[in-house]
Amino acid sequence: YRYISVYERVTGQKFEFSRSVLPTPQRMMANLQRCGLARGCCAVLMADSDSDMPHLEKIQSTLNKWGVPSHVRICSAHDQPTKLTATLQYYNQSIQPLVIVACARGTDALSGAASCHSLFPVVSCPADGWNESCLKNPSGCSNAVILRPENVSKFVCQAFSHVNPMYREMLLASFQEKVHKLNAADKYH
Image (cartoon, rainbow, N blue to C red; front, side, top):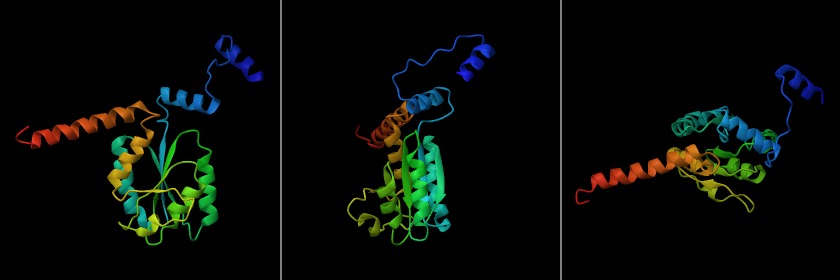
């Protein structure tokens, strides 16, 4: 109770415990969001190699258009399996929702391994385009596959639309804009 005493002496106010029914991690995130210090979500962009950076930068650029924060991590499932597992265990402790975007060329072990160890959804967006290996992961691997960086970003935004109303509003506006453009292009509308 030492810190409560310090709080009361510094502020001159009596300390009141929170009456919130939310668990502490969710309450912390809600407070950070309310103060504008956190968005309440994050995309983790993972690649097997730094040679995939141009692809990651495309995805990150389209995520920025939606206002989705992101982290870029380089971690090879083949060459650094221990680091990959440790990295995913670190992110599994996050109090905010995450989506893992796995970008790998050739034999994509990254998306399968990530989906086996992550508490959060994993989306494979191969850096070399169509890549069958991310579709043939073994049983228990639950990664989704989206080939276009801009579609991955929209998917991530949709995944977060239930935790941040800003993303919901942006998506609804993008749907309306698309319909408006289609109607404008239809000369018989």
